[in-house]
Structure formats: structure tokens, C-alpha cells
Length: 312
Image (cartoon, rainbow, N blue to C red):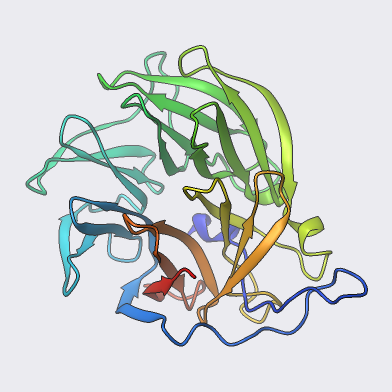
């Protein structure tokens, strides 16, 4: 099994909390208006909407794939990369976190490969590059998960608009999903192996400080099952959407996305039939959530699906 899979968690159908004790109930059926955009995705991850297309990576295919509203098309192939996320830059390139080979892959607007980034300006390598979070200044934060198991060596780097990369925070337990707050003052980072979301203050510049635990996912779900959070995104209302990728395909709450307010209170859940829902992206009007689903984490090429979920 690829070492990346060891950090994955579970999300399933969750109903409402029981009135008496804040416990999660049985899983409801998912929204009947949900559409499957790609029924043959291979470990889809790290999506975004850009230039009238949905871009996402397929870890099992080593590709960046696009969906134009009708067709899924391979935009770029990155052999040996093990991509986990994709993001555009101000210079018209696309970057991919290459979890397997420890680099930040670079792709031109024409889909052709460019020389990758392999270390920051001070020579720090990237161990398990994982997810991106653009800011409003043209820069991009990204996580490097670090080694698997008990090692607490995950890091957060920053790519400046000119391509200079700096280390901004370290000592995370499997750094994973990452997102900048709507006002640009806070950065949220998922620590998968500690089942929590941490918050850091941004500034001056890209520097990070005042780290604190924002939310513990096991506490949020009242310890119904151990949750391994994965991706995180924030909507126009400031709500955080948190995905998960289970280690146990029969885990309770699998296929479940948790939506919390700015104080970490659970507002709703979104249920999907796939075992894992590691990451997602909003449509430009935020009326649709494009969800990456994984049906089998144990057997390559890790079949999954890409969903379009209406947000009511």
C-alpha cells in the first residue's frame, strides 16, 4: 500500500444529532439531485474551479484532469508524481503537490511539464507535499505531510508570486488540508493523525504565528468513531467544509462532510455513497460542491468518483 494511504480517514452518512445527547444518528440517504461527473476516477483529489473548468488530480493515474461541463479530459500527465492537489499561479502555470516524489510539479498552460520545485530557498526538502491554499496576494501556502506514523514533522511552506518558496511553520502531525480565511488573516491546517484542525494568524507578510487548536473532529462527532480529517475549504459565509478519508471502509460516518461555522459549531453534514470524501471545490456561484470520492483505499488504482452536490 502506498504510504500516503496510511493517513486517510473516514466520512459517511450522518443524520442529525440526537436531541438528548449530541450523538450522531444513522446515516441518511444523499441528495437525489447529486450527479456523478466521473464514474471512473482513480483516487481523485485536490480540485478547484478555474477558467470555466473543474481541475482535479487523479492520484491513481498520475494526472491532472479537467471537466468542462460535459467531458472529463486528461490535461497533464505527471509520471511518478502521486499528485494530491492542483492550483493555478499568477504566471499562468499550474502546480501539483507530488506526494510520492517529494516535489511541486509545474505544468504550463499548454499542459506540458516544466522543471519542478524540489526544495525551498533554504534547502528544506518537501516530504509528502499534500494540499494548496492560495491567498489574495498571489502567493500559495502548501502543506508537506511529513513521514508517516508517530513522526511530528509536517510543515507549511509559502510560494511567493515570484516562485520563491519559504518554510513558514513546522511540527505538524501529518499536515494535510489547508485553507486561508475569507479576510486573509487566518490559516487553517488539518493535522490528520491528531484528528484536528489548527488555526494560525497570518502576517506580517506570509509569516504565521499564534497557533491554536480550532476544532477536534472526534469531539465534534462525540467519539462515535475516530475521524481522520483530510481536506478543508471555506465558503463565502465563512463556513468550513471538512472532508475525511477512512482507514476502515465500514467505519461509521463514512462518506460524510462536516460543515462548521466560524466558531467550530456543527451546522450540517453532507452525505455521499463513497467511502472517502477527501477534498472538494465550490462552483463560482457556490451553489454546487464538487466532491472527490474514493470507493476503495486498499487496492490500486483506488477507484472513485467525482460528484456535483447541490448546496441548498
